[in-house]
Image (cartoon, rainbow, N blue to C red; front, side, top):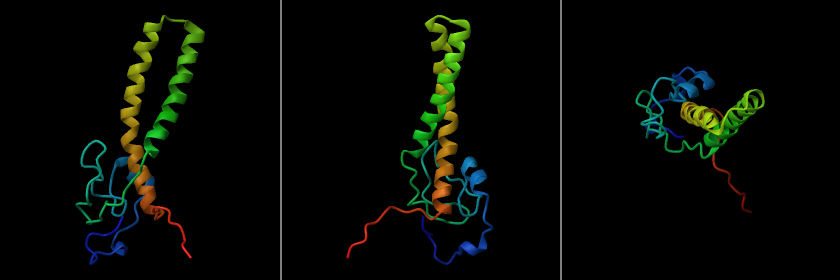
Length: 132
């Protein structure tokens, strides 16, 4: 993520808490401007500090973490309910499908914001091969 306007300096901005900033979906540099233009679409730049989000790319990371986390929770709860109550299949479907959808929608955006902020904080970039 580079600057759109080179006259603005990173030194002007207090370093925001990366975890809180990412989970709230705010700019990684100033912590004020919104990171997202839609539910998951990243803005072109920060409206507050003019930081370009052109290289912000979390890839499939948020989806993978959401799948693993939700899978662990839902499968654990499903097994617990099955072993203790042995309800019919329709009860399982009525419980776990809405819970899975709600957790996925609730976690995907904060995790994407968190990974983008960590990418900026650690100056992560695409890997390059050294050529002799």
